[in-house]
Image 1 (cartoon, rainbow, N blue to C red):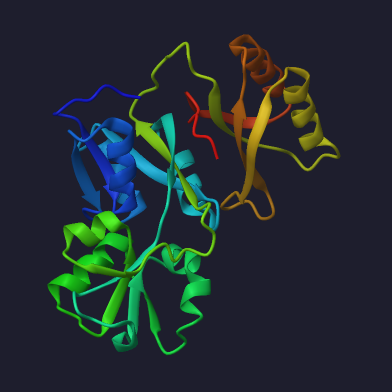
Image 2: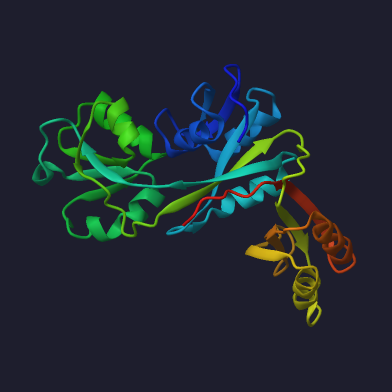
Amino acid sequence: MTTKNKELSVAIQGVTGAFHEIAARTYFGQDIQTINCDQFKDLFTAVEQHRADYGIVAIENTIAGSILENYLLLRKSKLKVIGEICLHITQNLMVLPGTRIEDITEVYSHPIAIQQSKDFLDGYPYMKLINWSDTASSARKIAEEHLDHAAAIASDYAAKLYGLEIIAPNIQTHKQNFTRFLILSRSAVENPSDNKASICFELTHQPGSLVDVLAAFKQHDINLTKIQSLPILGSPFQYAFYVDLEWNDRSNFDRAIAKVLNLVSNLSVLGEYQRDSHEF
């Protein structure tokens, strides 16, 4: 956990009350300034251009899966991953005080939040689902425009901020709903307690090339917690592999990486950090 600092600024995607803000304050502490960004790419730019000290970006969700856009942004950027946090996500249906659920004809929220709440929403087929930029801004829209026929899906924190009433709490389909966020910095931070890394590499179309890489990590007792492949733009049917690794002995990681360097091309260490110790 990073030491609290009243001067610390953290770039987030979304407006005040977004899950990115909740994650940022959980990780850094309450005494931070959040720099609100409309899009994920703006978040990266804010840190790169020194308008924010750090950034925090969602990378995967236990229901919606990987956020592929952010893998591409991470590789393109020169920012380094220096930490992670897994946040338990609860989605809530909220309205102007006094609005009844039978009055609702429209529901606003981020597409992922709508997807996470699909089973609940299927019970109200007359409600029009409207994709919005983020969960908190959908709550703000309901409040500022006094939409007594509409609802938002967002956090209970957003409901309190914008004076809305939660008429259906915890509507996410799966209650074990977590989003993993990465902490971004302009420079790497060396820490002897680091036990996790995110890397990216490319492979040639040779039989067993990926198996050889996996075997090298296994040989050195490195645990692979995630493998994500994405197309390489401009190279049809060529793929880059994004891999998260954990270790108990740092020297094993160093030896594994040295061996893998001879098996792959364009290997990048996106960051080394301490894994979130959250118990699921």
